[in-house]
Length: 90
Ligand SMILES: [Zn+2]
Image (cartoon, rainbow, N blue to C red; front, side, top):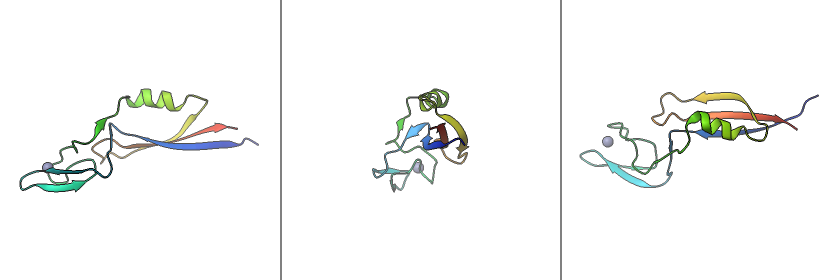
């Protein structure tokens, strides 16, 4: 019988700064964290761009014999949040 170990990790076009406060629109609306202004859709300025393209990120995640078994992208997410599950034989 094959034994597997698993890991999960998320990729997105931007990296979130969870608890940082920011404001947008007139009159100003204040947000804490989040990915975008729910009123105008502008991205949270505290986000930093993810340095890796998704394909390059996947290559990096698979180093050490990991294989992808599930990819789930949130298409409503302004930053294309993508959740991946990997496994490898132990
Ligand atoms: Zn706004």
